[in-house]
Length: 111
Image (cartoon, rainbow, N blue to C red; front, side, top):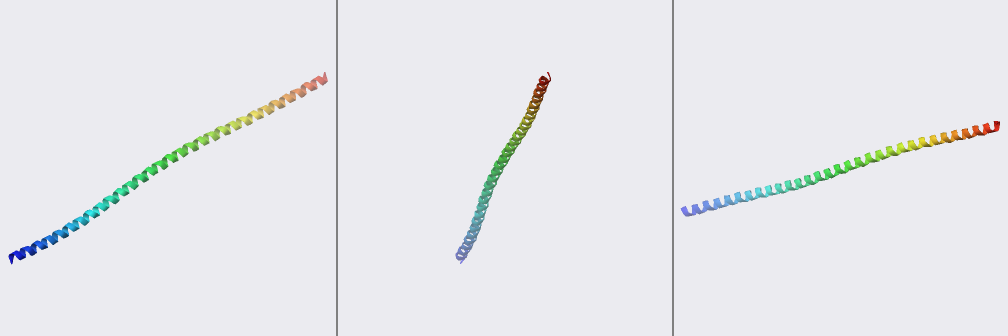
């Protein structure tokens, strides 16, 4: 009788320990899944940060190109203005030369 009770008690203890071990395994599995998810999220976060850094670098390069284009346009505009001024000066010189020729022609007619 005492041996049977001891055996029953041992069976209960084994059953309880089995439940405890199964519960512990379940918790470990959940923790492993959580760590896996956290690692994946960390990887995604790192990739997003790298993508953001690339986008910022490209934006800075685009701004630099835009600044260069603006400078070239300003220089081109300045050259255009200088060319226009040179053309006006040449036209004025031509007009003066023509006026001088007319004056010389008029003087030679008078003499």
